[in-house]
Amino acid sequence: MTQIELAKQGIVSPQVKHVAEKEGVEIDFVLQGLVSGVIVIPASPNHTNLVPCGIGKGLRTKVNVNIGTSPDFYDLDTELQKLQTAIEFGSDTVMDLSTGGDISAIRQAIINASTLPVGTVPIYQVGIEAIEKHGAIVNMSVDEIFDVIEQQAKDGVDFMTVHCGVTQATIARLKNQGRTTDIVSRGGAFLTGWMLHNEKENPLYQYYDRLLELAHDFDITLSLGDGLRPGCLADATDRAQVEELITIGELVKRAREADVQAIVEGPGHLPLDQVTSNVQLEKSLCHGAPFYVLGPLVTDIGAGYDHIVGAIGGAIAAAAGTDFLCYVTPTEHLGLPGVEDVKEGVIASRIAAHAGDIVKGVKGAKELDDQMSQARKIFDWETQIKLSLDPEHSKQIHERFATGGRTCSMCGKYCAIALIEKYLNRRLPVSE
Image (cartoon, rainbow, N blue to C red; front, side):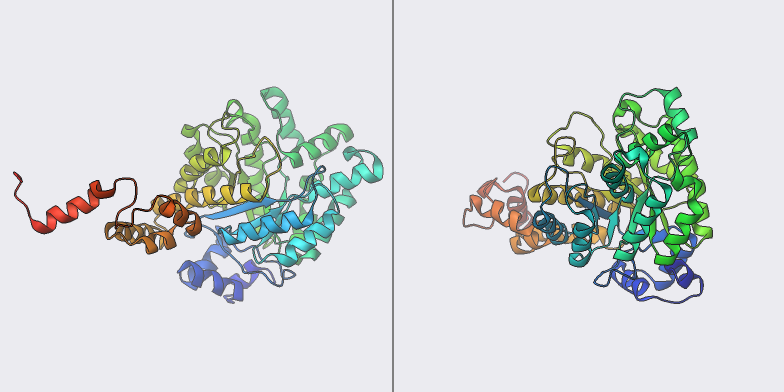
């Protein structure tokens, strides 16, 4: 049975119990969230070393890290290093987006090594194999699409991005709309090319019931992908994007009726003043389904620093109700991220997620900041370093120009906190 079916019967699975304990919420809260669809627990029965996490309303905002090979760079050891870095610095999930090398072997190695839920985009593998077998992506067959989905499910993939909302109607909207960057989603591009060439409907939409059956059999959480997400600010919240979102909302309802867990993916590139409205739009059209956003990126000129751009948008999105942030690295738009880029990206997104959790009132979020404030007040550097997201980095910075005194090297004997502590404790007259 799926997590939803168990929850409907009031059965507390080990995954539900773990999530409730980790989040500090009641078991019934998680069960009700699963039944209503506002919480998901991506947990394949075939992922045997998984430590599950919950994503959704009332829970801590989660962060995903994308790793995976490219056609030019496909070293498995490097990807496993990225995975361990993601785990070390607090990612909640990881996605294998490999497009180079032995994709199946790389995926299996990542699943075997990962205690985090693992996600994939099956259409990548389908498209690449179609080129090898048939000479072009547009020659892939419907059965080949579902065969890969089933194989990845058997391997132990916990959640899958599937671009079911890219339909002929969506493409028509795109053509009529006109865009600066058209389609920036690889999965969306693969399927759009196939649909236009073959003059047929998207198989993931046309045969959605077949997809639901597979997802149910393996308890796969469907991440309903945004193939028409805006790739620049000029394309934000246009008719093509909203057309797809309306369709996804209908597919969320059908997934719930089939007892299949579903989340919704979102933009993408959005100006600051559209971030909150996009979250509200998704929650309204998609029946409160957990929302998973890339960034969002709030300016297009942050090349080399897009992890900062994404963190700005991510903090606003999380505060507005987004449940799941996909990290952005400094190499976004420029190249394949390395191990250090993964670290920078996950920390930036964790900052954004935590900032949002404070606003949402997530249990335990503000308490961490209160602990840090108390430690700063009494110059407890050990606790400050321990509470930071990267303790070793914090320690190195603090000790770089150590003064040997209580205060840091920024203010030294002129530290405002130290001076006020002295003055308040002595209760000096104002004239002194």
